[in-house]
Image 1: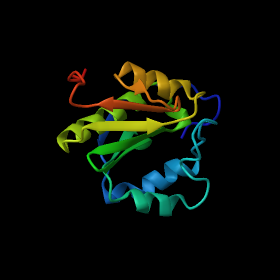
Image 2: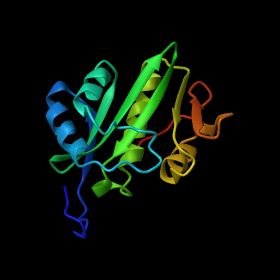
Image 3: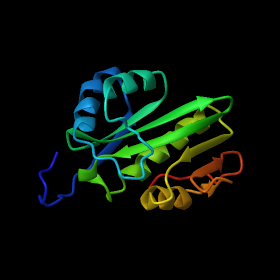
Image 4: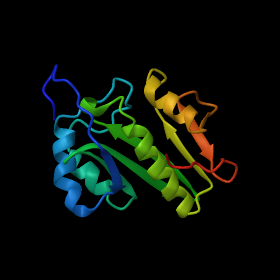
Length: 159
């Protein structure tokens, strides 16, 4: 990861399905991860390995910036719907990584035949709420939630 104040350089980002061999690199990313204040306690401050182990049964995606993991996304399907979660390391925020991860998650949700995906965040997590809105999600009755009905959603084409 970059040191504070180090300039960003343009690095190609590759998003792919996470594999078991990514676990150590994900742990490394989360060791220095600084969640936004609006992160609802995820990832957890302690026992990140146990949390990753619990997520291992769900479709997960990793974003690589060069050779390091810059972000992680997960889809937790249940009863025809799925919860989405996206985490981008602070050294790589503002580079479109969250969008790439969320697109991969939505593609997987469609492949699985899910009817709806949803997420939750604090109201002051403006970047996530903007991204969700830009990708067609709408706010739920609880303003901290957002959802996307996949049957009615327009097909998202990849850039």
